[in-house]
Length: 420
Image (cartoon, rainbow, N blue to C red; front, side, top):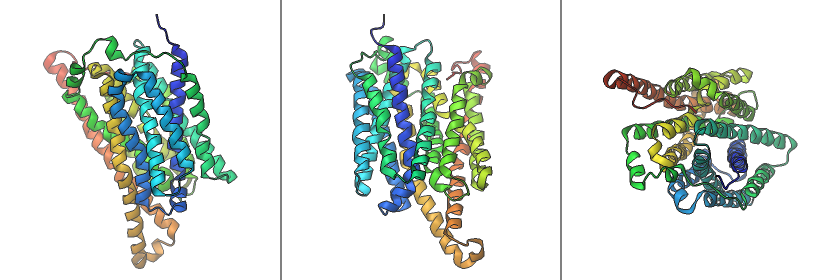
């Protein structure tokens, strides 16, 4: 008999993920504003935003092993502390380093939310694991929509960036109150009595390593693009924060219907289809302008919608013995890749701006002003990012052939398709 309040814990974990997403969308909306206020270059802005992903990566990598040592409840306490300190310090930031540190702390809080929730949801809903993990993941795009709309309204009202950050404190206090004085389950690995050594060995499985590599590319395709899209497409004729909201609104709808989708398409097939749509969407976005950008953003949203939960669900069901460590490594690898990519994307964007400025001397009539320069630089950066889903198309096509190889030579599918 459970001694913990399953419904309350699950609700609190959803609100904690909502906070994680709101920090993401609000930060995306503030990239340009913070750069101007603190006189930061595009590369420095990329470094500051990457701090959130570095913190996330750190928390994800240590969160898996910590889960069974200090317990799920203590992990949630760490995420609350990270969020609280990070958000308050962001409001009182005075320059590059204070922004970097505060963003790092927020990222640590975000990472502990993920690592604790993966373990808790998998443990509480062992017979509905993929369904509940997918339902939980809905709150990330939902949080981006909520945070993005609030940021847009606050910007219109002229209340300033500190109000945008401060408003995130409210749901943070709510999830903290819901978790307060609660009992928590043990991880599924402990319940199944899978040893630490067996868990570590399974993390060297060739399929798991292959999925880690793919996770790096899927994460940058989704999160790297979403984090920079407001800045990259800031002058295309529509409020770019609304593009971010639109993309994530479609992701909410898609994740709500993931069960139906995966009854028709295997997880392997879905990963391949997602790669194709992500590639087409990014290319289309790089050539779109005005309200037609929403059509391109819609295609991109279809592509990235189920990337993350499908990757996690695939490992959770097909490589169960990897336990909390495997799930943390998957999430941590994805965030590590984004951490490394964020400054690089900023540098690419900055370089494209500089190259465009130099081109003015030769092709002045084609580049009439700074707005056109930024548009060209942003769209060219998106074309660079489109290389990643292009690689994934090849990778997930090979995963399909691996399944056919298993059927042909072993008479059965050794690695079963999963659903999320």
